[in-house]
Length: 374
Image (cartoon, rainbow, N blue to C red; front, top):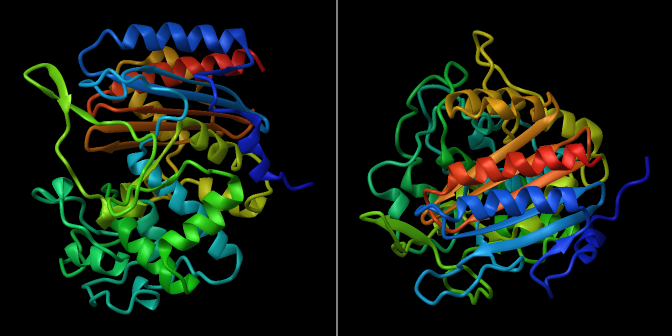
């Protein structure tokens, strides 16, 4: 199979205009859904992109990038991708695994000597499916304002705490587990995490507008972020996400998210056997499905989410080959849907912390329209 030239995908769309539209079915479905969601007080601005095959076929912004200035969202507006950062990090994990630099089942201290001995050993494979017993945020950590210049300094926030359960016996979501994984990737790859991400993931795929939200560096076209105050959207509190690049600290555009998704629908950026490994659902020690592969959420996980949220009308679009991830950060949310069989990716970003239900509805409408137009 001929590998795709992923860096060229980036030139298949342009940010000179607000939208890139190649299919009226997709355009109509997204615009109708987005305009409906913008009537709600928890939706300030949205950015939506759809990709099919090797191309971003639609990219458009809706609403305000800043509630105070009225600046509009465009396709080039960057927003926080939150925990979609975890699948970005998974791509680097895949690269190092393919290079023979990483044993997913080795104890994490193999790559992070500073990790203190725990009651039980914990592996990267377990942490990648949220079965490692590493705790999630505690107290006001989500509101962190301290700058951590290195990954090693950032993980000091939690690595001395005991595991909260025996690895492999439970599934409990943990962003800190992914921050620890990024430290392991540094140990395995022999370079800084952000340098490897820039060179081996973002650079190779052509994600020119995706980067760490580093407050010490200038960031162009970055949206403001919002929360509600007595039912009214206001600018969100300042946070510094340097402690969690891998767990939720990157920013980017919906189109870059789609480029990333399309790079995972066929072999090229990664080998097919690596993609199969990343997407295969893991199980607990007693054979219960985890809802995660390596980093990626599974179709079964999505079906469960739709049933819980009363969105069962969308169940027919959730094929077994759907992989995805959502993201939530201070004042922003994100959603990436990737249909690996039909070569479709849908990326969505919003600049309000309570807008995730809107992203689910718009995203599923977009996926449904993209499948219908195939």
